[in-house]
Image (cartoon, rainbow, N blue to C red; front, side, top):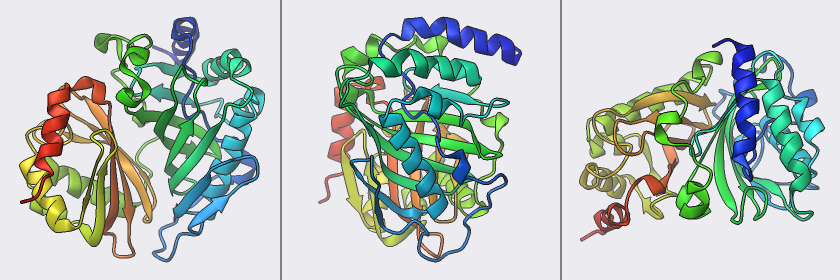
Length: 343
């Protein structure tokens, strides 16, 4: 399908979406982003500092693994988004190559016009006090992950806590894919909006931006994915720093230290959606300080996200797994929790 056909199709399907708009949107600060921005591959403290409080954004943002430039971009974007300025946001998408996809709903929006029309239709309906705010930023102005919270009423009767995977080209947003847990949003709310599985995109448009992440995080992502694919928890644990944190947002689990992380990844390898044969890296974003990788799997949960924070030696200090918990039953989630019990 050519770009014109893709855009037209996305616009015509937009009406079916009803209450769900772009979760992550885009970057509304292209003026802050020079074309050809370089990777932040130095290993010192993140340029963005530890936290950032931005006028117009009510949350305190963790920028400890983001560059100053990335922190400015996302702060400006979410300030603009919370102001419901759809024209302001739309101008910062690439008109030549912009794609937004929601990995949980299965909704693709191909091209600048489709994304603009989506914002234009839904932003005026948002509650006056509704906000969308960044919580944590990982990466640089080439590619990054941003965790954010949408308050109740923006995308339905529940709040949404999501992570957006973002690629930039020539100072503009080129690809944005959102990941979040449908159970937190509410199963009934999700079912009302989600496409049938056989209508989900088969192309997640990573080829339109290429693999431009830092070689450091690409290497760590591939090594971790290979260990998880082989079901070798101890091998995976060797990639973590001594005080590392492993957290699975969907399973509501937090595990501390390589020994416990390795034990859990071994004992739970038969139930975790991101371990075993058929799992692979789809796309990597970020800098030597942090970012993450989208993963694909052959099981009941076909896609998800691992975000990674790295230390100066390239070891993982924090991993956060984000995937759709509605694709597994309650017993599977309880089994994951039981496998985390130490004896």
